[in-house]
Structure formats: C-alpha cells, structure tokens
Image (tube, one colour):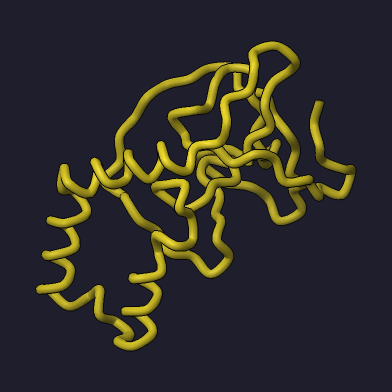
Length: 147
C-alpha cells in the first residue's frame, strides 16, 4: 500500500541502496514523468511498485545537493554512495565551504577522479554498507517502501 496522500506528501519509507531494490518494492515517483519532457510543476509524488529491474553503470560516484535528494527519471533519489549518508559528503562540503570552486581546479579534479574510482574506496564503501546494514527482515508480508 502506498503511503502518499492526495497532496503528494509521502511518509518516508526505509532507505535502501539501488542494489537492494526488488520487484514489488515501492518507490516515490512523479507519476507523469517522461524521460524527454520531465515532470510537470504541479505533479504529486506517489508510491509506485517496481515492476522490472535492469542494471546500468554510471561514472557519477558522489553528488552534493542542497536538499539531500534529487529526482532521477521521476524517482526520488538520495545522493549517497553508502549507508553513511550525509557523513560521506562532509569532506566535500567542508572543502567547498573553505575553498569555493576548489573542485574545478585541475589538480583537485584529477586527484578526485582517480581516488573516487579506486578499488580501495569501493572496498571501504562495501565495508561501511555491511556495518551499517539494517537487520534482515523475514520474507512474507507486502513490498518494502523505498525512498
């Protein structure tokens, strides 16, 4: 069952990584979203069941937003790579605060590109996700809510 009212206000569900989303889970989505034209200004969010899963890769690893969320293909998403959430972006926020525009400096951009794609960082992210993973729920009962 959805947890959104007729005004598009939704109760926050359990946050999971993209790899944990399964068919039947429910995502917050703009119902009228279209990849070409985007959502309309008067759209209301609704809980939509996942009907199919596909895998894709992206070069984007970290995104820092003012609102701590954004919309990707109509689905409400969080900008975090791990369950550490906001804490993983603190170094980036701090550097931007003390040196605005630092990420545009060629040396910093080059170093970040190298570090953010390193196998060592991926290994640390895997450990963080395992340490902060929620307790597994028993199977049965309806789909999970995912925000």
